[in-house]
Every structure is written in structure tokens, then in C-alpha cells.
Amino acid sequence: MPGTQKVQQGTVVSDKMDKTVVVQIERLVQHPVYKKYIRLRQRYKAHDADNRCRIGDVVSIVETRPLSRDKRWRVQAVLKQATVE
Image (cartoon, rainbow, N blue to C red; front, side, top):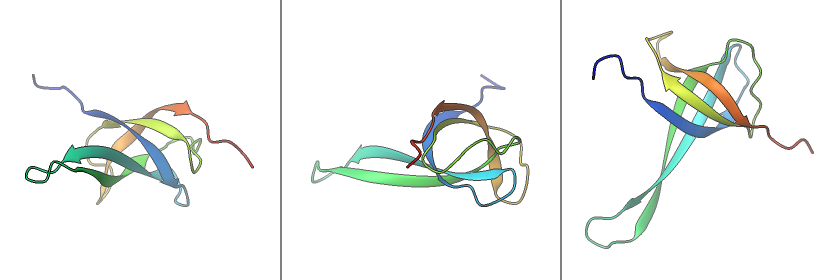
């Protein structure tokens, strides 16, 4: 179906850039031969227009048009705020 956007959930691991956060998405994949589960991590740069995300937040990101050289996602919602220590 054309126009369908991918949506993923992940954890913010960096918020040092202006209006950009790095979101890490973790998934478990079973090894085809040994049947052991492997934890795969993928990192995406996502557009955060209001600079509201902090390290440790769980966010939902949605695929969008290219916004910069390596930024193709934007933050859709902050699902869970990080606990402040």
C-alpha cells in the first residue's frame, strides 16, 4: 500500500545535537542454524523539532522524507519519560 509509513519504538541514546536524537531499536532474532536468540541493535537519527526528548526516553519514531544526509525518521511521540536521578 503506497504511503504507508514504518513506525518503530526505541530508546533515546543521545540528545546532544540540536533538533536531532539518536534512537536505538533492539530486536531478538533466532539464529537459523543454532537456534539461539541474538540481540540486534539498530541506531537511527530522528528529528525532534521541540528538543523534548532526553537520554533514556522510550519514543515512537516514524519514517519520513530525507531531512538531512542521514536523518530519515522523526519522533512521533514520547511513550515513557526517563527517570531523573
